[in-house]
Image (cartoon, rainbow, N blue to C red):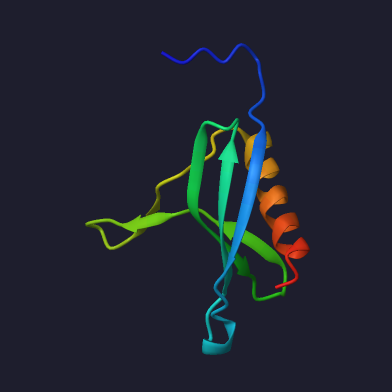
Length: 97
């Protein structure tokens, strides 16, 4: 059983791996790995460019029997979700890709 005690999870590192598919009509610019509290590694996060030119992230997903893609990682806390997005986008921008 996990006891949270009101503590926030801290993003301890973000790594960006270039993987630009935009020249082939794709939207993926890079992949990212995020480490939380030095104990949890989130892999396979995609940095993507929206049709309007903005950046967003997409969590790893898997195609189900219903032929729909389902996220494998789902941040349930809205603040943590925003922190991860901001950390990944900032790291991508800082990487000069």
